[in-house]
Image (cartoon, rainbow, N blue to C red; front, side, top):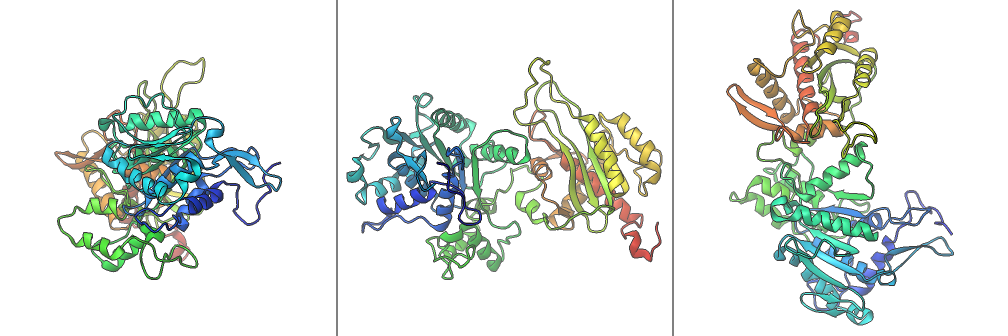
Length: 558
């Protein structure tokens, strides 16, 4: 029979509750020798319910690829070790619903030989999970009850095994592992074989209907790590740029405005990042009512921030779990997040200005994006009107020439027309490169109504290339200052945020400009360019005396 249906709001079928009970009943708490059971925290229990969620009709697993990102010391490695033992021994393979509509499972060994891998790029990294896993397996009656032979380097099951592997393994490709944990994937890169190992483990699990879990700390954008790639894959799903399914990303970091020099702000940020592992005597404030104090010593962690020998960026990544920035990044993620305001809404007929950056196609690589960004004149709130990007993994339709993806020009033109109809647009700056004829059409159609103009002859045309480097540098400086000082706000739209974070600083004779990481990079910055143009247009509008809405001037219109 199918699932019984929800008994409370938000309930969905999952084997997570069973796995949670199984861990408490069968696993010993690592780091102790008194036989105390391993009891997952509330956050960990919630992750189990998400990770083992089932489809209410088919009863199949929904998630096959998980990413659990928390700060250093939160307890990721022991927790994923407990999941590995459950995958090896417990009834985690979905087997429909019982007579009461409750989900049930069966063990992997009932359908195939279970191989479980604890993976990392170095042996020292595998120890993070492997050592507490051994303690959990040896500390109670698990080995006796399930017939395990627990050795220092491998655990033999009655059928199958659990073992650690690294990127130097030569036999991974055909390894039919039903589950693998991938630890510290922020350090898995092309150079150390991590990217190849992760790809192989994912493929192996998919073939069997198995699953994997990554447990990274915050990654550094631009390094191309497995953690960064996985986050990008998940974001592409959320944006509708990918048809992939089955990825669960559970990432939490301190708020972007956490001030590392202010103790109160820092402690609040750490408590948020560490959640219910925080040892604060009042317990975890993320839950209502607050849960019991945890094990992470917040007071001791704050001491690391007062040690001047530690790098601030490392502290943010390791303890605040904040995804910061590459060495040459124009903006950091905390800076962008601090400027984001999701509560502001731009209404029809609001007075706005526009920024536009366009592209067409390229025969090789990923085509640049086309972006139309708005900025409300009254408060400097930037919002995404349209960003047209090549879908992730795009391939030409069957039977058509293998040329590159093309921007849907007709759709873009329609969106520009709709924007002028919907809002009170008083200015628009557009980089005309590859869109010269369309920009000229916009100037003819809308130029007379624009109250702020780039030039008298070309009210919309605003070149971001060529011999205007001084003007470009100044526009970029103004935008950067406004964002970092929170003089502007962002709507948090995915493409706009991504493109801002993709932008890289490049020193020129005139000053700092922004570019992609490299000319062929698939990480685009066009929405960032459009945002800079919109902000420059707003500044020019304010200088022209257009900052006040018409209705605020006693009914008189400029």
